[in-house]
Image (cartoon, rainbow, N blue to C red; front, side, top):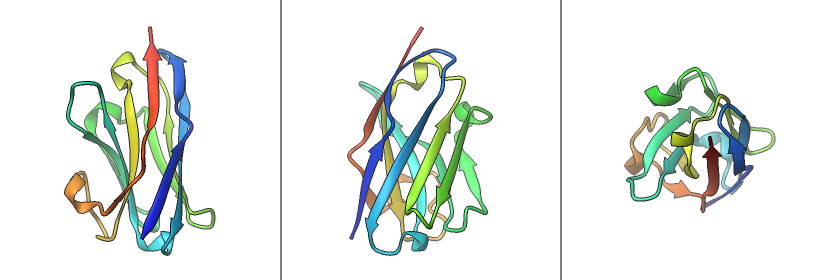
Length: 124
């Protein structure tokens, strides 16, 4: 089992920045690829970004490329999502997820463990 706890969400003006953190406990963190997903009110959960175990490979959904950066610190069992130039359409609950698959990609079914989420609200 892997337990994931997100933090860092909040209320921010458009154009601002937030950094989300996801702390993992349980199994060996470096064995897992990590991802961030988000779900806006009335919408399906969507993929945001993913990073492999070594941080040597990342992938982003098109709408956040150039604005968001996913990173991880295996020594701290933590994955991050740096979000810059935030837009109102980024408003959502953000979830981190851990996958045993070496490269789970943007597919939620490839992730085995999920956090409870953290709210991000961007106002204009």
